[in-house]
Structures are given as C-alpha cells and as structure tokens.
Image (cartoon, rainbow over all chains, first blue to last red; front, side, top):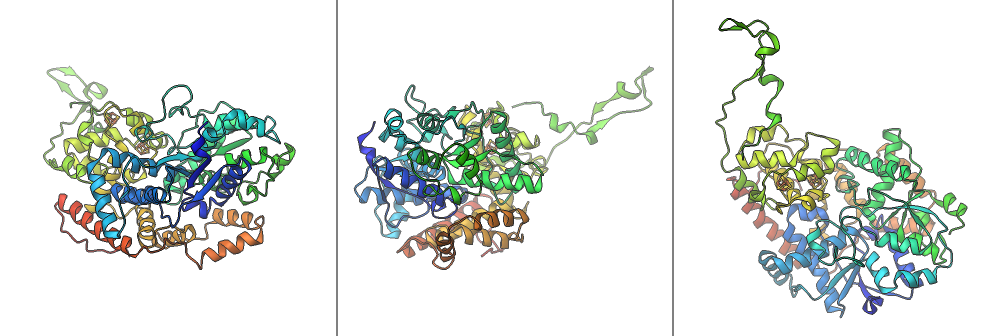
Length: 307
Length: 251
Ligand code: SF4
Ligand code: SF4
C-alpha cells in the first residue's frame, strides 16, 4: 500500500467531461467511498491525445507536460488520470522529456512563449485509476470493504492498447511479482476479483478496439469491436469491464453499429470497472452513472442483486 | 536486403505459352510458365530520408525485415494487404511506384502499437505508418484521408481552446468529410440514451453546447503553438523538396 496515493492530483481529461461522464462520476464516487482524496488540476488543458501526436509528437509532449507542471505547482508529486489516452500521453511526455533533448528544447521554447515555466522530468509521477485504487487501498483491504459482493458476476477485463503499449514509456511495469504486466495485465482483474467477480480467461485483454478511427473508419472499428465482443461471450463473460472512456464508448457504439449495420447482435454488457467497484462498495447503480451508459445493463445487474 | 517478395509476382507479370517448343522439347502450358523480367529504373533514392524527416519515421533505417510488425498487426488481421514490413522494405529500396499501389490503405493504421511492442529493432513501425501517410498526403498522392481530417479538426480545436468538446468535434468532422451527422446507428444510440438520462444531465450536456469548455488564459499558448506548427510544416515540406506554403487551406 502506498500512503502517498491517498491524496493525489486528478486529471480527468476532455473525454471524462463528455462521453466518459459516467467514468468521471464513478471514479470520484469510488474514491469517496474508499476515503481517498482527488484534487482536480486547476485550468488543465487537453493532453494532446493521439490526434495532436499524429500532427506533431513534440507538441503533444508540450501539452501533456503543461498539465504535469500544474500538478507540481499545486504541490503534488502524483497525478492520477483514469483515461488510458491521457495516462499514456502524460507517461509518454515524462519519458520523452527524460530521454530526448529535442523534446526538452521544444517544450522549453513553447513554455517560454506561453509565459510559463517548463515542466522538468522526474517531478511528478503519473498513475492510472487502476494503480491508484490498487496501491492506495490494496486488494485485501478492498475485500474487507465490500458491502455488496459482485457475486460471481462473470467478467472479461478489457485494457485496450494505451495502458501497456509501447512498453518503454511504462518503466514500472513488467518488474515481476506485484508489478503490472504489459503482456497480460491483471490490476483490474485483481480489483474485481476482490469485489467478488469471477474473471473469465480472456485472450483479447490488450486487443485494439479501433478507437483511433471510431468515426473516420467506422467499418474497421466495428469489425474489431465485434471480434472483442464475440470473444468475450465465447469466454463466458456476462460483462466486459473497461478502464478507458474511448474504449468504453467505442465498444458501446460499435456494439450497436454491428447490430444495425452488420446484423450481428451481442448481449455482453459493458461497464466501467469503477461502476462495478462502486456497486460492490454499496453505491447505487444511479450513483455510479449506470443509466448514462449506452449499453443497457440494468436488468442483469438487478438479477445479480446489484445497484 | 534481398528478400524475395511474393507481392511482386503478379498475374500480369506471369507468362505462359499454350504452345511452345524449345530445342525440340515441348514445353507447352504450365511447363513454360515464367515470370517476366522487371527492369526498375524509377527508384526514389531519397525516399527513406524523406520518410525519416517526418515525425515518426526517424528510425526506419533500423529495420531488419523480421516481419514481427506485420505478424502482430491489428489491421493486417482484417486485410492481408496491410503490410507494414513490406512498406518499410519498399521505402528503404526507394520503390515509390510499388508503394503507391497501397496508397489508399496505409492511413488505416489504428495506432495500436502492437508492432512497436513486437519490433526487436525499435523501429517504431506505428510512427513509420503515420509518417508514410503524411508523406503521401504532402506529396499530393492522396487526398486528405478521413483520419487525417479528424486529426486536423481535433488539433485545431485543442490549439484554439486548450480543450476538446466532443459534440462540436463530431459536427465539424462530419461537415468536413461531408457525411450526414444523422447516421442511422447514431440516432438509435442517442435515442436510447436520451430516454434514460436524468433531465439535469441532459440540460448540462445541452449547456455544454453553449458554454464551450476551454482552458483560461490560453491566448499566448495558442499563438506559440500556431507559430510552431507553421515552422514544422515548412520544415517538413522543405525536407520533401516542396515549396514552403501549401496552396490549399482547410480552415
Ligand atoms: S518488426 Fe521492426 S525490424 Fe521487424 S520488420 Fe517490422 S519494423 Fe522491421
Ligand atoms: S500500430 Fe498500425 S501498423 Fe502497428 S500493429 Fe497497429 S495497426 Fe498495425
């Protein structure tokens, strides 16, 4: 357990203020229920996402680094980002700033022109919501706090691309027992198992949902998502647990699109891991935003005595 | 790097004589099947340098053609013609015309980084795909592809406001790509959601359309970014031997 994670800076990112609203809400509620404190970054900006990276990677580093600097100026040495994209980008900025002189130069130049101090690598650690809950509370403690067990709910844990790839920006992963694995991540599995779920063996944990082209190449995304959904069902999952707003809305959107456009219907439900944890901690389905999901899971949850 | 490429053996390059005798030996039909000799003279010897000059392409020279990228590739699973290793091979040899045969699918890379994860030489093939798509566009070989329009619309909004507001992003994207916003599957989705959401949240979402999310005091940062983007564009065009200013404008 890591004491310093009990109070961390919070970077929600743009998606959590839009389509990922339920993730934002459930993350905050779970934190509250566990006695953890989140302090939102003041006047943050977009991390640059994949789109700015495609235009210019150093510019994306600058945008992400600006947020790390805000965390530092607010007196924090840890910032928590629940969105895989944001988490990935802040990590990438940290890596590039400590390994690449060109990135440091660009960030310093742009910061000076903006009238800001540049962020220097090593001052703020970026963590994901999974690491936050796992390390601030721990699975043993979480197990004790469960009021309403997930009761054997069968879950396929889906981590997507940005949480583990490319591996060089995650130096803390793949460090043996206790650390996260980039090949077969398990932090979400661990938390949900502690909450009473049964995790099915799911080979597509880190497969790609085509989130990059959700709108610009919908057919590719639909085929990739359909593959994830049907595989989860074949593995016996009732729910796919997500930990990224882009993956989550991609799975939801293309589940509907696969049905409308390809005539392929799947029934597996899609929920944020924080929604599942929240309900296990005794919060209502409404409180963790289940009604904001596109994927209609309320009947299943009721049948399981949840929410 | 003499790797035998099946791709180069195309039906139009195969010759087969129904009736042929060579030195008195009958080699009609399949016995006389052979591949026509190809003479290639139009190499673009600067091709590898051009790709390497664009963001993401920097490490293309490291590739030793092991094929791990293609083997792990998400899009290759859907379309066998999507072949990062092969494209890197063509670029390094300067076989521009061969690469152009695939110009309309290269942009489809979903940036999953499975290739980057698998690559033993730290080539960052994902970056090479982006650089190549960018190169095709700068050279005028392809019109701006949907994903690049999306990147641009997205980036323009971040540069201008500091934040993204998804509704506005989607509307702009659909306008630029001339698609109807009222896609049938989108309507089904939105209808389902509206019927379930609490009124207060709907009002909040509606309000977001009026009070656009933005970062405060962003002006100087916006100017610094726009200036930088201008410099970079000029640099990239210069590396490809193109005039500094693009004639078309998308804004
Ligand atoms: S995995 Fe790397 S070294 Fe192997 S073919 Fe692909 S880019 Fe080249
Ligand atoms: S990043 Fe692109 S090229 Fe690499 S594996 Fe994914 S889809 Fe294929």
